[in-house]
Image: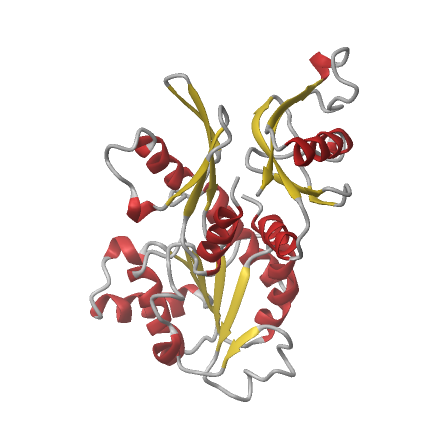
Length: 104
Length: 229
């Protein structure tokens, strides 16, 4: 687990920021970050950590802002096989699933 | 996820306690599992036990529900006995790898803040400061004073406490007499065989910095490829 990211998440919550936590829950093939990797995002789109080598963070951040607004968790999938379904993919040829949930 | 879970994980981490954050991916609920708080009728008990051993996070499906088990084991800590030149070279390398570091040496001429700025430095005898809290299975012990009065107690403690790595500086001859001393103190052959000596990977290291690389490489190998994790 990325403990320093969770510490950042705690600090952001203490500052009164509304945040979401994105977690890599599944990887197939050559994925850049292992399962359990975190990205913490606030309602303004500030973030710390990574769920890929920078390939899909932008998409995760915009989905996370939606999750913070709606309060409903989301499961995101990224991979080269889904290029037509998703705007972004992983150039390394892997596939990942990312769970995004708000911290309340 | 409730923010209290976040606070509890961070507290566990500060106290060097292993913990698993369980997320129910079907409904978003979360909870924590600790190794000593595992209930036998918990449907995730077997999976949690296996993951505490492997340290790997991953998915579990129980009935219709999908769970994600996010495993957090304490950060590897390196305890170095000896505030010597090799130890100085180790400081920035250990920091870059993200491991915790403590340096212990009762010789106050060696253990000075000038030589070791911004590192946890204890100018004490190992027998006075090596507590159970400091030495656990997530700890690597590196003994580099060359002085049996300082090194021996620390090595014995590390072997008894099941440190994932135990290394000692010294020639094969020095190590031979060290093994005799530890054996007469009741350390078994099996435990003695766990000491890496002469310390470090065999890369022909010559300078203190190169020896530090060899030691750190050996510690990483024990951590990532060893039997203990």
